[in-house]
Image (cartoon, rainbow, N blue to C red; front, top):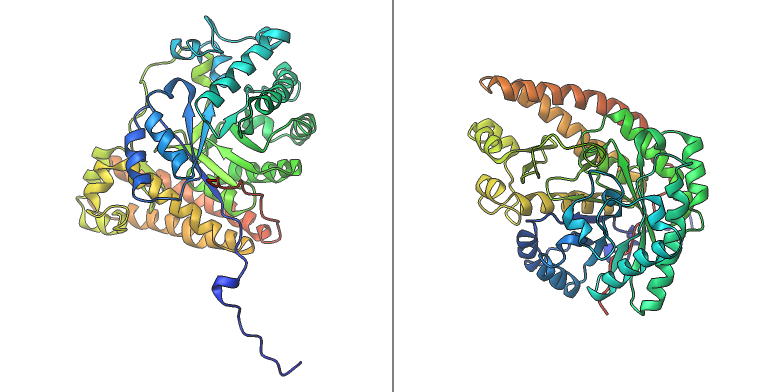
Length: 423
């Protein structure tokens, strides 16, 4: 046997790692561009999250998504509904809404059972394939909402079973980063939800997202690895950018969910106190080279510089056949398409190599490109200032993530959610 030379197995016969999941939170005006995208055969997303108050507006997207094998996930908006300034008239008009924001008493006894029944009835009537359970933003392990959330998840599972529909139940675990950092708090919450019925956990962490530092991202990944003890897939909700991709690459998450050029980080400050104005966010242009989202006017101005255009313009003709023009005029398609490719690349890489691939192909390249562009002459004071801040951020981020990556190869891969199969 010492003379036998092992021939590599054909690629088609090699075992492939489970793909990593990517879900898109659909904003009020995102549906038409997303419909156009999936009409081209795009399969990089696992599904779409639909806000309950937008179901009628997004009906065509929901129908086409189900037909093409995507999950359609209901967000019942119980998180904002339970905070004074998260409550809006459009949410109050939902069958489980009301004339004011929800309180603990609204989820006690018959009142709580009624709200849950209305949520599941709504999900079944509108043919959702998954539903985010009726949980709330926690302040810690001793938050009284936690006990009610666990009870309501059990009630939701019973209602789904009674409906006769095949609807997967997601446990949306929402808590501040300060709580997630504390091991005793994490373990207490993990123990408390250990028996709560769910198919997947979606983790939404306040004060974490696409702009997070390397140190904060490392803490997030470490906490996610502990949450895997629940033995169900873990998806990072409202997570994007290099921090989100890093959590996928280093075994923290099996999937990520965020909005179209937005909702890539999470803050509940606007639900707790009056808003300072500003309204909803507009679409932005995604520049993967710099890990930046820019306003279209700013991106167009930047691309007028031939050297910057050479660095930052999209060259993928499947994504942007007309280059910069499509990037700026169709930012939804470009952003979702590029993020889908980033997640796919990591998912198709062997788990033991994902951290190295992420550091080499994403973190180091972004860090080097930001530094290179920041040193260019005649960029304008505002752009130079922005790039210098990004350069400082990337330098620290790169150092912190390099330390995490050293140990990541020995970490088991996170469980990934399953893609919906059309029967």
